[in-house]
Image (cartoon, rainbow, N blue to C red):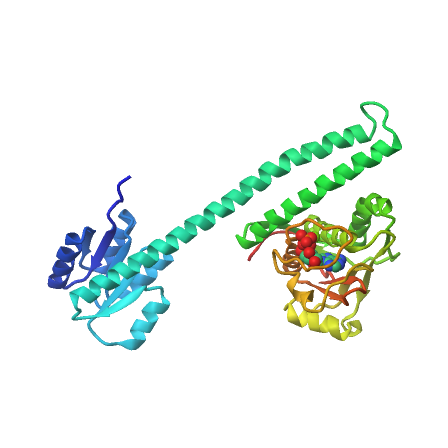
Length: 395
Ligand SMILES: Nc1ncnc2c1ncn2[C@@H]1O[C@H](COP(=O)(O)OP(=O)(O)O)[C@@H](O)[C@H]1O
Ligand SMILES: [Mg+2]
């Protein structure tokens, strides 16, 4: 495929300069157009996709700076080189801040000008290529995640039908194996969901339905979900009794996935016969410990809340070294815990938890001493009014 010549728009009211540039650029293989004022330039930009604009600073009518601003406001992705006859530095700074790629003082040396033009075009090509690759990667992740999740959900459904004995008798041992198969598939679904949601957070496409939620009820459901897996490994999984009635303003399905990630992690790092304890309580601001106040300040979450709901998932497993306490919330980070079995995972679970909790104006952090178990703590502001809203959470 032959490469399309790049298009350059020269915007200058001085005919001589425009002519010289036009001749030189066309000789170098570019397609050029000329506009003698800003208004005409903008019309040309609407009509054609220019790779580069050579823009005079001072022209009758709209100034070069204003043309530059309109180019950026309208999201034209042309590179812009400003041309100025006056050494007005503050104006140059303004232009560079407004997104100009470079500037040239008139009268200019033609070779220097050509070098700058080539450099600006090269930079633009690199940026565009990077953007295209990013887009391709995003599309691929979305496509792959959807295409992997749908058949997996069907597999879980089918195994569940057999496990329930709806297609004929199933022995307790067979049911147990089928249950384990379901849980393994669900682990993969959790990973895919984490990947999809991180992508949604990154691209500003996360749609959340915020409503008042009782956190204790959500925890009860999460614990029930993991109880069979815990029982199989002789792990005590308890939700401490609490009659907390305080609600929090969250997207309940996102928070349920946060709980599933934390309990799922604890199950991975607790040895057979170990224990996981989950608690949920309400704290007035005055009841917060120093580490809790620090955590709120660190994550810039809602420090002015009239009260907080604290959720803790505590296990007596491998724990996390103090060096890793913060790192593990970064994506793709896995600490080198010596676990009872080498665990899979993509290191996205806690990164997802952090994004989700912070999107609800809360904080999440870990406390642990290597070998003494891990403690994952979430503080969320108590809900004060009863409105239900639909939000697109920004990055
Ligand atoms: N309860 C826990 N006890 C000890 N280490 C943990 C615990 N939860 C998480 N970790 C550490 O944090 C890392 C990141 O966890 P996560 O983001 O959920 O990723 P993944 O589960 O894919 O490894 C884990 O690899 C592990 O090293
Ligand atoms: Mg995990």
